[in-house]
Length: 285
Ligand SMILES: [Fe+2]
Ligand SMILES: [Fe+2]
Image 1 (cartoon, rainbow, N blue to C red):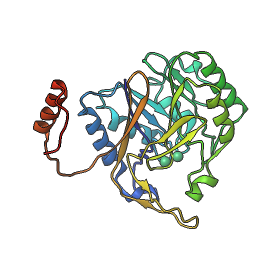
Image 2: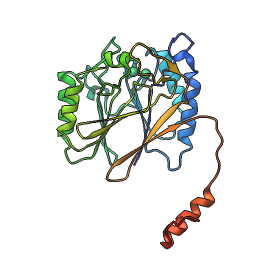
Image 3: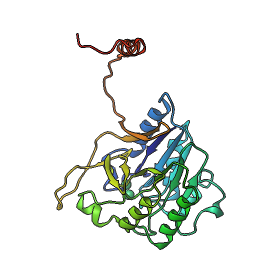
């Protein structure tokens, strides 16, 4: 099973966004979509883990939908702090699993159960706020949802990473209840991977005994500057992740989409595979 992840697309309809105006986020998302469509093997599903638009307006959602429309793999949209709950639900009513009435009223958490790995999305975004919360209601939902299928390998996806990363301004406005989130994950060892967004960088940490992988943005990245008094956005290449499930574990690959040179080494690949098949080993020289 191959899970592609895109995040923090920050689609806007003009250049009003101070952070996102560094790059043309529509153009970079389109480039990522084209890249994903060219993958062989193709992803089975594309998780879009929040901040799909800059302001959560219907116009921005319409623009997002137009850009991702060519995607050949099914898209699972998920909200972040830059999205707007009611408009998000309206914009993606046809893509969210189940009937609209199946979703919790106060958060857009959901489960997709028709893959080899169970996909559980926990929405910790807070209406009208840029920080997130893992409160009683969300903790009960996640704990109960995971308890319902203890024997199914599970990937949990969310927008806010449940740990502090050293980017001070992101940490102080991050997730309230991260310790509790870790406790819930620890209680359900079938969770083999947690994936998140929000930080606009590729970042990894372990909570309980589970890897949390943060996916870079399809638009702009946050400058890797751990000085607590500074912050910046940078036009590093748009990114995505591929989480490859081999039946026993996930391996996460981070991809960047940019113009660049490529040397084809298919002949070398055939040589290596041939030696492996014959059991010849790989001596130098
Ligand atoms: Fe974002
Ligand atoms: Fe965010």
